[in-house]
Amino acid sequence: MKNFYYTSIAVFLFIALSQESLAQLNCYSLQAPAFMVEGMEKVAIMNFENRNDTYWRYYNPNDYGSQLADYMVGLLLEEHRGVFTEEKNKANKVTGDDFTMKKLMAQKKAKKYAKGTNFMDRYRTDVYTVVERGQLDKIMKEQSLGASGAISDADATEVGKLLGLDVIISGGYASDVRTKINGNSSRTSYNGKKIVNVDVTMKIISIETGEILTMVNKTATTKRTSSGKTHSEASSSLPSDDYLVRECMQMAAKELVSHFAPMFVYQELEVEKPLVKGYKEKFKEAKELVQEDDLSGAFSILKEVYDADPYDAAMAHNMGVVYEAVGNFDEAIEYHKASYEIDPSKNHTASLERALDSKEALKELGRLGADITPYKFDPNAKERLAIVKVKTKGKKNDRIEVYLEPNKGSDIAAKVPGDTEFTQISAEGTWYKIKLLGGKEGYIHKENLNVK
Image (cartoon, rainbow, N blue to C red):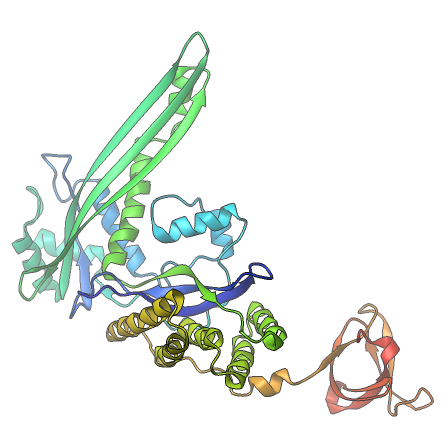
C-alpha cells in the first residue's frame, strides 16, 4: 500500500533563524499510518503472548502482554495523540527511539518546546470504536478460550464475530534484560548498566475472512547507568527490570498503534524569504502575527505579497506551506505546483510531493470519521490589520486627559489610563483622535503617546 506522508495541522510559529537564513514553520502534523486497514471501524486488542514463557496462559496475572494491550487501547482513545504541550514536555522524561519523542528531546536540549494554538483540533485520532477489555474477556471465558494456552487466529476470529468486530489485533512479545556491574573493590568505584529489549509482533486479522491483513514487528530498547562505591550500591541504583520492561512496552505501544492509526507528529516546514527585498518588512510582520496566533492576519499579508509578485517561487511556496498547515491540500497543491514550475528545486519538488500524498492521506482519514472540512481564513483580516493602534505613556494607575477638540482649551472628554492601547481614528498634526468607551471619541496630544 502507498506510503502516506503528513497531513498538516496548524499548531505553529515562525522562527527567524538568522538574518541571512531561512525561516521555519514549526507545526504539528497529522500523520497517516503506514498501513490503512480498509473497512476497519470496530476493533478489539487481545493480550499479547509472552514468548519467553513456554507455559504462558491468556489470563496470567500481571502479565506484560495485557499491559501492552491496555497501553494500545489508551492510545487509540486519545483525541489528539502525539500532541505535547510545553507543560508535558517539561514534566515528562523523554525516552525511546520513537520519532516524535526524539524530536521533543532535541527541543528540550535546546530549551525550545513545541507549543502553540491548535487551529484544527477537529482533526481527531480517536477514530476507531474500541471494544472495552472487560467485554472481550467475558466472551473469551464464555467460549472457554485462553485458559489452557495461547489463542489461535481461528479462535480470535470467532471471538471477533461474537463482538461484531471488523478486525481483531493479537500478537506476541519477547523481553531481554541484561545487567552489568564493572569495577573493583580496591578503587571503591563501580559502574552499572542495564539494557532492556522488547521485541513485539502484531497482526491485524479480518473478522470477515480470517485473513491476516498486516503483520509488523517492532523493537523497543531502553538503558540506564549508575555508579556507586560498592557493587551493591551501583546495582541498587539501577531501576528495576519491571520498570524498564514497562517503559519499553509503552514505547512499543506507540510504534504499533502508529502502524495502523493516525497520530500527530511535530515537524518543521521551510518557509522562504521573498525574492524582492521591498517585501521584507511585510514578511517580518507576517511572522510576528503567527507568533501571536493570528493565522488569518499572517495569511492576508502573505497573500498580498504573493499577489503583487506571483512569479516569486518563494512566495508561491510559502502560500502552499500555509495551506498545508491548515489542511487545505487542494489550495496547497496549486501553489506548490506554481512554485515548482518557476523553480523546480529539491525543496519545491519535495513540498509538492508531500502535499499530493497528504491529500490522499486525508481522504483515508475522512473515511475513518475525521472532519476534513477545509480551514477558512478570516476574510476580514486585511481590514482588521489596517486598524491603527496607539498606546498611552505612563502606568495603568495614571490618568491622561483626552479633549473634545484638538486643543488643551477644549472641554475634557475623558481621563484615560496610561500604558493602554486605543484605536486611532485620525491624526491632526500633534493631536490624535481616538476611540473611547461607550462609542465616544476624543483628542489626545502626541506627548502622551508612544508614537514615533
